[in-house]
Image 1: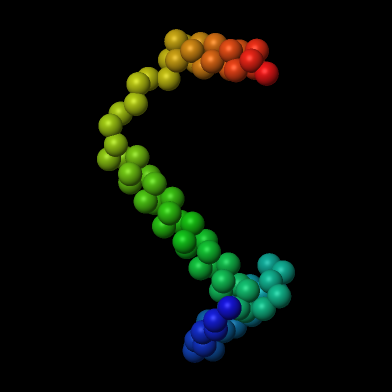
Image 2: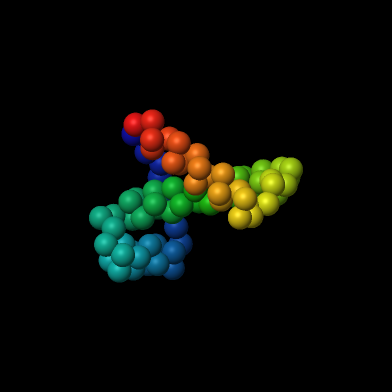
Length: 80
């Protein structure tokens, strides 16, 4: 694992230290890694939402749709 050193003003360092204590992180680095992972997840979700927003509408999920799903499940389970 590579390392990165960052400088924080005292107010931010105090905030990180408080979060480490309150949320059970082992260190400030662990807290920052968790923040970065959550930001990556947020960006991925945003990309997926935008892709969905720009995609063609799907057929409606009406009663007939769910009946076809039920029939597909029944056929699949009967084969096993």
